[in-house]
Image (cartoon, rainbow, N blue to C red):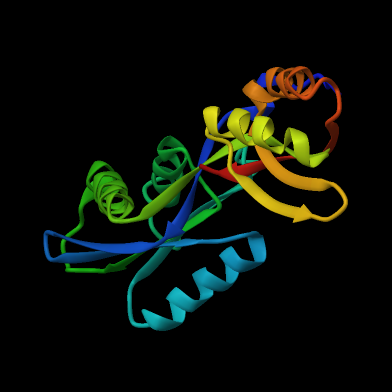
Length: 216
């Protein structure tokens, strides 16, 4: 039943549930940050293209995105701004937020006054931080989907153990035997299995279905 799991592979991370926008005006230049959840690189590219079409008359549509629970895929674009003044600072903001599967576009309408390297970095990163504050996120935790099969006499004990650990029953079936499907946090999984076996005098049959991230 036990498997070795690398703790670094099981770290919690946040995902974007609902995106948002924010605006900033700096020396007459207007910066508009738009943030959206994306599942993969294709979605990120489509979102960036959508923003470029929406703000077709803007001087720049700079972008950045982070995909994967361990930020396996990251990209950024300055879209004509001086190198390292827009896309990279935006990417650093996204990485620093801990949010994954997220894309951002910051649109700039040029106001006629140059902001300089430092001013651009502050504007692009600042408006994106503001947009992130308006977003809705959720935390993903690593766990195990477990199927529990037992007779009716042990159901009460199992339900008590699950409730004590605040583990919700995902699905259940009551026929000749009772089957329950639950997701247990990885740090509680081994102890839960041991307690289920002991509480039911080994009548409960446990089957690990998969290891996965889930919302908490």
